[in-house]
Image (cartoon, rainbow, N blue to C red; front, side, top):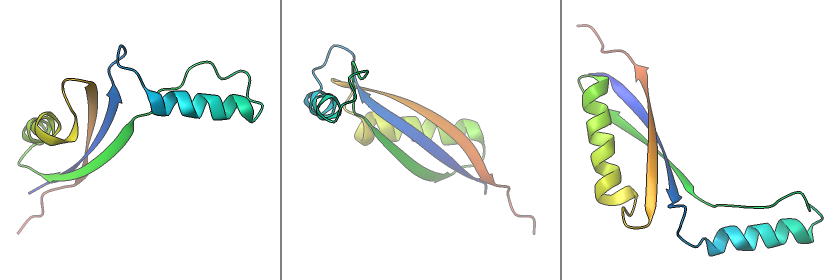
Length: 90
């Protein structure tokens, strides 16, 4: 069965305050990076999924995001799927 790599980016929704982003922005400004104007901090998660096809792998990865990896109240997620090996022939 083929395996797929789901690369998931989770970010706070635009209207949600991002205290970590504000702290990073303040630190960048203090280090002399005056050009930095706005910082949002998120997370990237990679999950290897075994599935019969890309469509099934995407459904599984989306369900993982909706149930655990992202908080739908305050976070949005985007996922990218890439096949990492072909089904082995017997």
